[in-house]
Each structure stands twice: as C-alpha cells, then as structure tokens.
Amino acid sequence: MLTETDLITIRRELHQHPELALHETETHERLLTIIADFNQTHLQVRTLPELPTAILIRVTGSAPQRTIGYRTDIDALPVTEATGLAYASQNPGIMHACGHDVHMAVALGVLSYFAEHQPQDNLIFFFQPAEESENGGKLAYEMNAFEADWRPDEFYGLHDNPDLPAGAIGCRMGTLFAGTTEVNVDFTGKGGHAAYPQDANDMVVAAAAFISQIQTIVSRNVDPIEGGVITLGKLEAGTIRNVIAETAHIEGTIRGLTQTMIEHIDDRIRDVAAGIARSFNAEVTVSLNQGGYLPVENDPALTANFINYMKENESIEFIETAPAMTGEDFGYLLSKIPGTMFWLGVGDDAQLHSATLTPDESAIQAGVDAITGFMTYRMLH
Ligand SMILES: CC(=O)N[C@@H](CCC[C@H](N)C(=O)O)C(=O)O
Picture 1 (cartoon, rainbow, N blue to C red):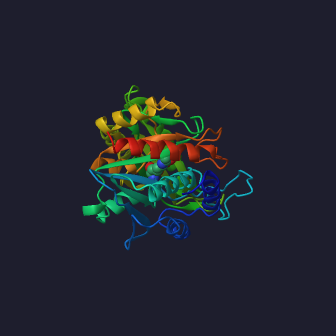
Picture 2 (picture 1 turned 30 degrees about the vertical axis):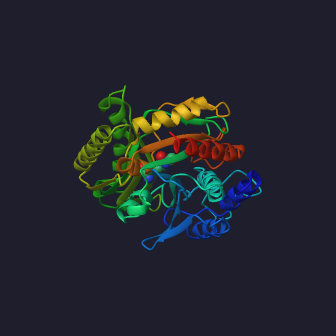
Picture 3 (picture 1 turned 120 degrees about the horizontal axis):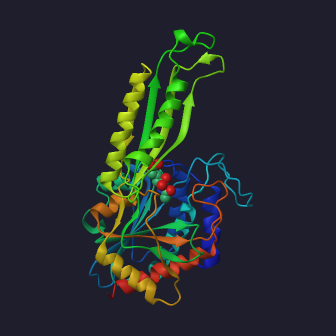
C-alpha cells in the first residue's frame, strides 16, 4: 500500500512530466508501472485501443452488491509553469496547472488501499485522459468502456480546490459545476495596405467590435440571478503593423449552470457574430462545441449519503460549497451513471489554471483517507 511519502513522490514525478489532452503517453506508462507493483490478486487492468492513454482497473469485491466507480483525470494544460519549484514541469509550456497530478496521486492511494484490502463491492477506477479539452470521459463512454462488468452502478470523482483548506472535502446537493461550450469564431475580410483602409476590410476592427459587443450578453441577456460566463482566452489577427488584417480568429468558453442557459448564450453568440459580420461586410464562421461538458449534476440520494458520511466523520472537515463556473466532462458521465462529484481542498493562494498553482500536498493523504473511508462506509449503507 502506498504511504504518504510514496504518494508525494509520485505526485511530484507526475508534476514534472505533464502532457496535454490525448497525448498523456508517458503519464499512462508511469501509471501502469506504479499499478503493476500493487497486489494483483483482485485486480484486472484494461486499456482502450481507441483511447490509448486511458486506463481502467476493476477490483473484484468479496461479496459484491454493487459496482462503485471512481474517476480521475490525467491531462495537463498549455501553461508555462512559474512556481520555481525544484520539481517543476520539465515539459516546456505544459503544466499540471489544474491539479490533475494531485487527483492521480489520490486515486493511486485509494486503489493501492483496496488492492491490499479487498473491498466488499466491486470497484472500477477510471484514469481518464482529456478533461481539459476533447472530453475524454464522453469518448470512453461512447467506446463502450463501461459495459457489462465494467459498468459502475454509481460514479464518484473529485477536483482539487485552492480556496478550501488542505484536506477539506467540499460538496453540495444539485449542480456542482457549470456546463461549458468551447467557442471558435473566424472573421474573414479583405487585407490591404495600412495606408489605404478605404480599400480593405479590417478584421482587427471587426474582432474588436465582436469582443466588445458580446460583453453585453451576460450583462443584458442573462438573468442575473442565474448568471453565466463568456471568457475569450485567445485572439489572433493580422501579421504585421502596416498590413490590414484579413482574418481574425477568436477562441473562448461559455459557462452556465443549466443546459438551457448554455444554449441561450450559444444562440446569442451566433446572433452577435452574424450581426457584426453583416455590419463589417465580413464572412464569419462560428463553431460551438459542448462535447461532454454538461453541467455536473450530483445525484440526490447518493450525494446525500456522501455528505452525510463526510459530515459525521470527525476527522474530515466538510464544507458545503456553492456551485462553481468551472467545467468538467465528468458531467457527461454523471448524466449516464448517477454519482457525486466533490472538491478536495488544497489550500493555495493561486487559482486553478494559474502558472503558480502549488497545491498543499498534505491534501493527498487526507483525500485518500476520506475516499477509502467513504467507499468502505458506502459498501455497508
Ligand atoms: C476544472 C476545470 O478547470 N475544467 C476546465 C474544463 C474545460 C472545459 C472546456 N474545454 C472549455 O474550455 O469550455 C475548465 O476550464 O473549467
């Protein structure tokens, strides 16, 4: 069984070698090597040929009444690390800036516990590629990863949370995370000499108008009680100061706590883009892709049971949290299989997706203890 020291060493190794969505090859190998050292008596390890960085592990229960699923994500982000840590990322421009290294260490800790202590119920562990983009959870589901003996009756998963004290567990009944839509907008006009704007059709100006205009969607078209988010994280246009830009490319993300709100914002983005294209005499293409990033809806009965355990256990600091505008493709898996997503506090000043994110590693063992404790309790209740 992995000790706290083992888990911290593993987390640091994973942290040094982050990989982007669907490219988690080294991470996959590293995880398989670690898992190969566990007691294999009750374990079955499975990989998916069409999603080659995914790993599924089945732990056969001693007297199973159900199959409990546990999912961790394994991918990193295109962020250049600025923590200055001795074990900082060795992959330039890529960082575990969302804490999936911590998620993996916790999952390995829980798995190593149940490899040594055969559970009563069956367990499925899913090491999922591509949470940050490309919806690995949905891809796996559509590849029949969770059929027959591999189908959990209920599914659990966590996300680390820098705003909560290290080791605390946060959760809520109902919606935990927003649904998201990835936005790609391309404007095409007519390039030209900077000195002759009258002969060109400047897509820098069209993009600027679009970006300003969509700020009114949340402020004017969204019920303030419900809320919503539109963030444009990327803009590319033009080539040099004295050439009028022929194209502009914008990437962003929409967030809403209900599917209705996401679709409402999607519609307004399309309308505004069409209006800007018309007024600038430009061509526009709008691509909106929700993939598997559905709102994360916690199952009422399972979540009440989860919260009950966390509240009753004196060694766990449980915090009831508000819904968050972060997205998670675990929302897709929870739309197919009931379950609960929850937060693990990692007490840090830096936010998720920040280049200085430095989770408090004491959260790892605390997370392992809370989850192994909960799963053992669940097998009896
Ligand atoms: C927990 C977290 O940070 N998740 C990501 C999920 C990405 C959703 C999707 N690719 C998008 O950007 O719309 C997040 O950014 O919330």
